[in-house]
Length: 204
Length: 339
Image (cartoon, rainbow over all chains, first blue to last red):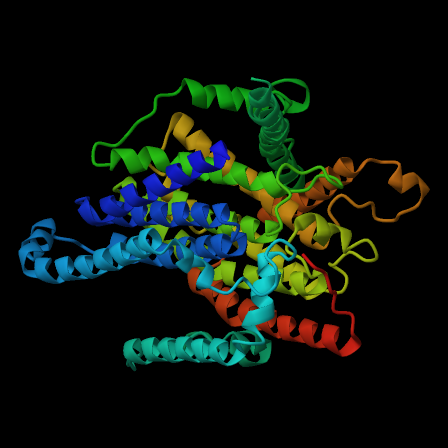
């Protein structure tokens, strides 16, 4: 038990600290690196509550793919740090409002937890018993049966987003020479070499 | 006090000893893989390879290590110091932590977690960070180009590796690596899933930045890519990490397709040999393929690399996922397990 508590406080503390550093460090690349650290610690917290599938998916999807692309883009930006700072006061009210909403929500959760401790039991128990079945299997059992339509809808939204991104960036460019592998491989001696007799002194 | 020893101290000591028992042979294997690479390529090119330090050059890896150890670590003045130092450490650590879930024999595994294959996939997809961080922190154009190439390349080939893993999982019905191996007792998966085996091996070459996909290093255009500013031990960490990743990728190939620790035939002379030795032999065979490819193939052009990943492997592996699932459902062979 002590080990679990220690692990929890370590993961939680590092996650919160790196979350703060994401918005406070000067260099955007360092921000992304701290964001990755925060994702990692969130994955650690998932493992501690026994959701190992979600933990691994968090690492594979967010750390392994999304954050790599973040880093890719942020590294390539030529960022003027002074310009970045100048907008700070302008955007402060919006940022403060978002922060306030999140803070009040957290306060509500903690308040409910203190004033009505029995509220937690109002949630339904996980439908296949968590102790009997691995959570990968349990997720599959509900995701592809009970929530099949929602799952398909989520897939459709992602597809639309992907098509949209391609349409937005696609433009016709003149004079692009594309490689046609099949054509290259089909090329042989008969259509690439020509043997001619050249008379001395005349040329072709 | 007895509680402290029984519940905390002894398990910790045992786990640390197990970790040492995995890491030390792994590092020796890495050292001799560098020698094997030079010997194999030498043999293929009708040379002798290193043969001066020790008998048959057997002490060559240690001489190289000592040389790197005695050199000076240079941090470029324009570099981002912290990230520059962390990058090789990240590469090296990530190449070691994945070994926690690899099963060497029935029950002989450090952490027998039930999402083992996802853990492996997650860790191998993180390998790109060491390279990207190194490329950015070096503050050099060559290093940065290498990092950008590597980021795009590794993200592209991860996608098809993911689908290959899904086809294997469909045939097993479990994410646990030991169960994946045990499911191959009748037939190793590389026979029914041969195209996926080939896709996995080639994607593995791209994922470990090995020739013919070693564009992030590309000596002829960008010197040494992301490693260009590194010297001494920080360079050695990259080098060790790269070779440990090669061994890891071979181990993954063995677990997913070549039956892990299982003997090829479960009859008398074969099953006398213990599982870990079979496993090591199979890893060595796959590693030989890695070296063979390096000695034989020219480097891919970058657009051809992307074409192969996105336009050839991705559709092929998608079709195989659908095909495998269809065959399994139609024939009723689909495995039903509780894990």
